[in-house]
Amino acid sequence: MKRGAVNPAPVDMAVKIGKMHLQNPIILASGTFGYGREYEDFIDISNIGALVVKGTTLEKRNGNPPPRIVETPAGMLNAIGLENPGIEVFLNEHLPYLRERGVAVIANIAGNTVEEYAAIASLIERQTGIVGIELNISCPNVKKGGLQFGTDPEMVYQVVDAVKGETSLPVIPKLSPNVTDIVEIAKAAEAGGADALSMINTLMGMAVDIEKRKPVLGNIFGGLSGPAIKPVALRMVYQVYREVNLPIIGGGGIMNYIDALEFIMVGATAVSIGTANFISPCIARDILEDLKGYLRQHKLGSIRELVGAAVQE
Amino acid sequence: MPFLENGLVVGHTRVSEDIYELEFITPRIASECHPGQFVHIRPSLSSYHPLLRRPLSLYDVDKRLGSITVLYKVVGKGTHLLTRVRTKDYVDVMGPLGRGFTLPGTHKNVLLVGGGVGIAPLVYLARVLREEKCKVQVLHGTENQKQMVAFDKLRQIGVEFMPATADGSAGFKGLVTDLLYKKIDPAEIDFIYACGPEPMMELVAAFADQHGIPGEVSLEEHMACGVGACLGCARKLKAEDEEYVKVCKDGPVFSMDKVKLYKKINGR
Ligand SMILES: Cc1cc2nc3c(=O)[nH]c(=O)nc-3n(C[C@H](O)[C@H](O)[C@H](O)COP(=O)(O)OP(=O)(O)OC[C@H]3O[C@@H](n4cnc5c(N)ncnc54)[C@H](O)[C@@H]3O)c2cc1C
Ligand SMILES: Cc1cc2nc3c(=O)[nH]c(=O)nc-3n(C[C@H](O)[C@H](O)[C@H](O)COP(=O)(O)O)c2cc1C
Ligand code: FES
Image (cartoon, rainbow over all chains, first blue to last red; front, side, top):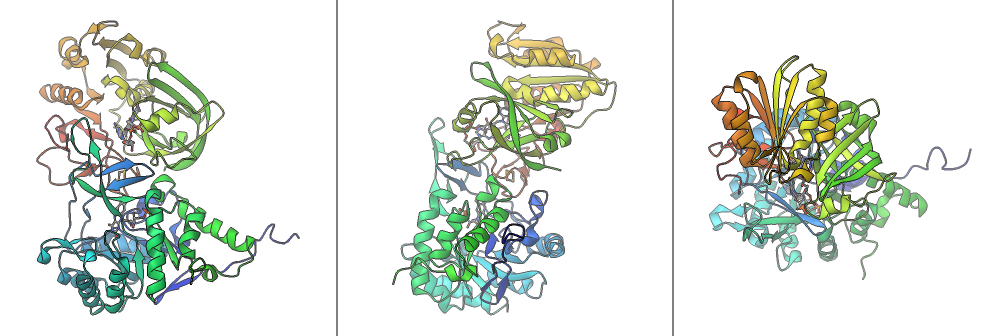
């Protein structure tokens, strides 16, 4: 039998992010894959590294007025406004389904106060199936005049520290790129006790309807995602990898395995796939298979060998 | 159950100035299609601009051949790129998606009211209604006779067809809703379906409401995922509603009595 023809050589795709052991580095990004069920006819998620579920708050939220999305060159803006049924409904109605599928679930939580983040984290503790908590810190802190948690190092420290106090699960703050110095924010998260970092969330932007002479989005501003943001995301992962000693879940505009490799080579241990799911619902599986192909082609034993490979001294 | 399928293009015709008919072979998707559902098509396989898929209604479906036909109007970048697709090319199709029309049962008297390319979902609906032995009347309103593109298909399906054109070049001169209010005897109608501009659908819904006739409309909203995952296609059905529906998953078809369209809501 010809080598590799029928049974391609096995490659080691497993990665470790803090205490999380994932079967492979492919992660489905929060807000782009619902609760998994929405895509069940298209892809078997049990083969994917992890699924980050839609951002969840303590109470149900109805979200922003429409229009909520608008396509932009090589990207899209979204202003969903964290529509979600609240943590109880997530735990009772959606988590059991995901548990049955056998997929590693990362909860994504959001709040308006440090106390809210802590309260949700304590509810998630001891829920089988959930392997980690991603903190969406691109939310306004109502006690600090609506300033986004993720834009202030002190608030980042506080929210990470408070959540760590409530849970033994790995805590992964998801960094907002809408800051002057991403490294400063990453260091604050590290000081607060973060187990890993997820980056990047969407870049704040807007679009204008010239016929109506108004902003397109009901919320005026929205988050830019998709291929357009990849260069910015890569740069930020690179900077943080050099300065901070935490595993990174990298993403922003990943559309194929080449994009995924770029993130891995600038220091991401795992990669998150967001907007690309809307274009190809099976893209996560395809990227995983193509990454394996790359490893075989280059005679590499493990995906871990490539982490940070492009980072210069 | 929906599928992702590469559809071999077997026909692509410009049927009016800016309206095209595209037929492709996607047997798995075709076998699952129900009128009122939609397919989500990538306008270009190789480019990231435009990035997102475009939702298009099922204009006609041939389950034996495994083919689907869509009728689309060129309005922007995505539909413009789609015009370049040629016979023997492949299109990347997701579908069928969404909740389609409710069928009223056999041997009913049914009225379909379409405005512009809003006629698209009503044509496949007419075909299925005829299979159910319903008597189908179709009112179609357009600017002019050239845009009256569904005429041949509807004649072949076997419906009573009444056109209305703004310039009077075909059929009734005026709005399709004027035609509806002037010429249709509500006593003869068991069920009404409408698809087109929202002010038009609102007037059709008001007609149905006045006469106690049940009916459904098909709504539009900008979409990303098309499957209920991104929550991008949210809108309110009535101004006073607190919650948003997802047009891609809860719709695109909604019962007329649940919607109040013409009020200035949903940012319009
Ligand atoms: C369920 C459903 C069924 C539809 N069926 C048909 C059909 O059978 N025939 C037809 O001609 N059109 C149909 N439309 C409208 C069609 O989807 C849009 O005309 C098309 O997406 C425009 O794309 P574009 O790139 O040419 O325009 P652009 O304006 O350049 O598109 C920019 C963005 O806005 C979105 N968009 C623009 N207009 C609409 C719209 N009216 N509805 C939803 N999204 C829009 C696009 O998808 C894209 O994401 C349907 C829409 C929905 C929601
Ligand atoms: C429609 C939409 C909804 C999103 N919702 C969330 C969310 O609830 N919580 C969160 O942390 N990130 C959310 N994101 C951000 C994505 O998880 C991801 O970080 C971002 O889109 C960049 O990656 P991408 O370019 O691959 O999409 C959302 C993105 C999109 C497009
Ligand atoms: S388009 Fe994503 S939820 Fe409807």
